[in-house]
Image 1: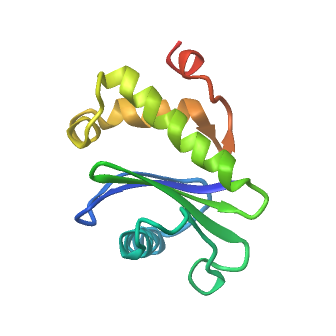
Image 2 (image 1 turned 30 degrees about the vertical axis):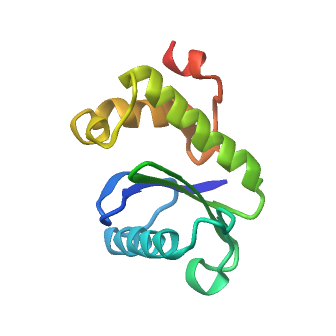
Amino acid sequence: MIKAFIVVNNHAMVRLCRFYEQLGVDKQTELCQTVYKIVTGRPDHLCSFVDDEKTFGPDTKLVYRHFATLYFCILSDRSESELAMLDLIQVYVETLDRVFENVCELDLIFNSPKAYTVLDETIVGGLVLEINSQKILG
């Protein structure tokens, strides 16, 4: 199950986040900051998977992808495939690209309801509902 989907820029500004488990606002903010520190602190030659029990707990892993100035991050439990999560990020970015015609960070800032709608059409309650961009937009 997906626990959170977070999009953060190079300057620690969260541009989009959706949590699929009950957490307080303080815990959500802390997780977003922790995710930012981890993904920006890793060299580019390392893989995009982070499995850190001390930071995220015993059943949570982080999968992320860096596009331009944005990091697209998914926190999920161990039952989710890392490659499937990378594919989900790719589908989300491609769908946003279709919606905004060359998506950029400003599109997420000024059109966040559309970005959240695309995310909500893709993931519902922490489960992947759809990975076909045409069906998501339909």
